Image 1 (cartoon, one colour):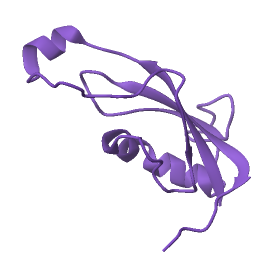
Image 2 (cartoon, one colour):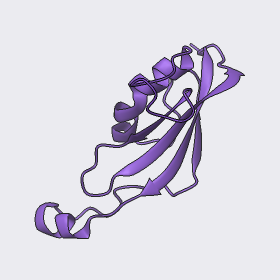
Image 3 (tube, one colour):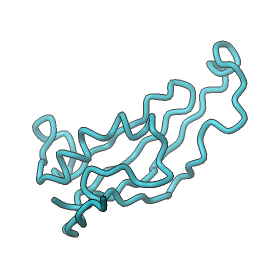
Length: 108
């Protein structure tokens, strides 16, 4: 099983939708563009929000186990995927990339 690199590539913010539908939230997302996480196999990296992880976990799992070429040629690099979190007010796009680095055994 391999480690998977997760990079925050874009953050959107739909203030019109927020003003119309969302209750005020003090700090909804603490991520920033260019931020990088390294998933140890299928384990969620520390600091990555649960909502984003739920959106990307199946792709991380597949990449960690050697999966590639999602949706028959969707990505230029078959060992990658572009996934967004499911926040409709401030979606974040993540580039997932399989690495050649072996994941370490889980502790416990």
